[in-house]
Amino acid sequence: MLRLSKLTDYAIVILSFMAKEELQGHTAVEIASVTGIAVPTVSKILKLLVNAKILSSTRGAKGGYALARLSENITIAHVISALEGPIALTECSISQQGCEQASGCSIRGNWNLINQTIHNALASVTLADMVKPAPVPALAWKQEVLIPVASLYR
Image (cartoon, rainbow, N blue to C red; front, side, top):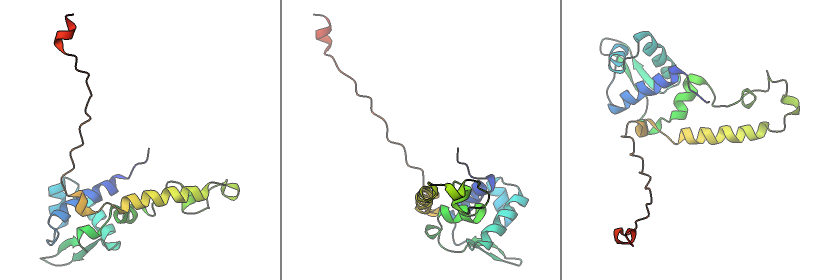
């Protein structure tokens, strides 16, 4: 199973909260209170997001954190890369070091194709998309065969 770290999950929760009020700044304590994520964890995530230029920070009494750009210009791929590093399913997609099979591997290029496809999918979803109400899944209609009741009694 592919799985993101808790920090990345929390980062998306934090950024989604901030995207609802894009133009407003927020303190780490306020974000922690609203999201239920511990202040030290929020602070760590905010620092990583500032370093990645996803957030901007302002010091001082009226300071805080704000989105560095509009939510429709921040993709989930940006967020994942900021917290996890390059998006790759296998280690050899990033570097051949650490793989004993790298010299004779004939599928390395195919992993790059898969990684690019996943990256493109994640890059197609923005923070603005994340704060929209989730679409209601289409109902699967069960086709029933209707038999006229009169034909049952013949």
